[in-house]
Image 1: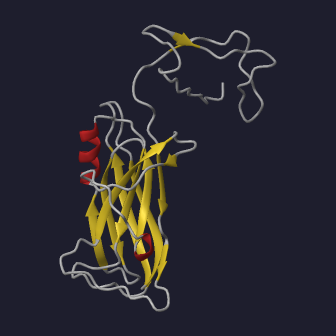
Image 2: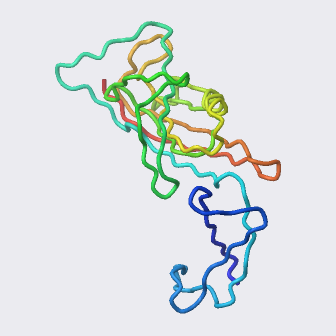
Image 3: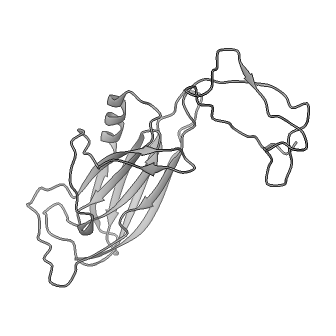
Length: 219
């Protein structure tokens, strides 16, 4: 009556299901399923046909790391001119949207395992189960463009795996440099993430996500 719905994700590996099967909630005073208001399904809960397909899409966004500072006595060198200021790494994720747990080492877009020093970089973390397209833009506190990156290689890697709804973690790393390889000066930098998910079907609308994060850099 209140327009709310509940979605159950059924695992075909543990539950035998077939075309034409239906599912319903067991409804009585001891029913385990209830909403925030304590309401339980009725005794005559309706049956609903099982829909087969991909798991519902989900996306979590955060910073990693959100602040980088050079320790006393350390030297953070400039990098060669032409070194890409931003790059992308991936790793698998166990679990679903409610409790995702990253597992395994970071790999580059071509699948090679890489050792990464996270102390000399800033970045954004995307944990998701669908590929996303879009761009990352970085600006200094004056609004001057420092670097940008297309997320096209995420889509290409996802398609190559053949697993459309596999959960993964994406790290978009900024190496703290500009196009000339020189270390950027200390300050607050704005990371703008503009993404959109490729719809699973023509009936879905494209959902655009636009986030801005403030990260601290002190080389």
